[in-house]
Image 1 (cartoon, rainbow, N blue to C red):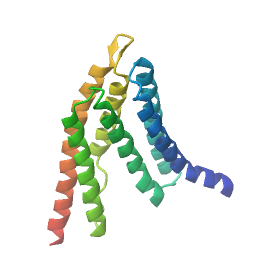
Image 2: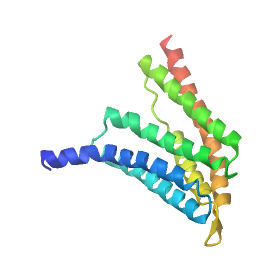
Image 3: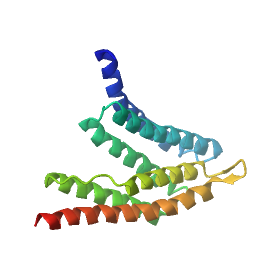
Length: 189
């Protein structure tokens, strides 16, 4: 591959992250029209954004295109997409506010912990639990955006089932980050 082709591949993950960020306002706008069409379009844009998350990670690892900007923007885009969409679903009575608060508080706590750890020179690797949490949250939000019954499937019920799984994984993976951080601190003393 020539140098020009290499640059295109190495910037692809960041471009996909930018597409994900661009989908966020589209999802939020569509949720302002909570009928079947608005809900379907919100789910469509949310699904497209979720697919860019899978693809950008794949291309970044596959072609060694992991950048500092990407490491910062990718999780920020994910958390923003999921948290803002959940917040928009609250006034539509599609998601309990207490579940959204627990999920957002966990995200803030883990982000803060990772910042403190980085300051101390400690790297806390993302755990498989965190990756599973993101998958469950994404499927839950997709189902709750769709909300209505399509092809005899009650997508609100599917979304809520995955949301309960996401909530369990959210709390579990959050506790896991704090346990790992504490373990590293204890071994340093």
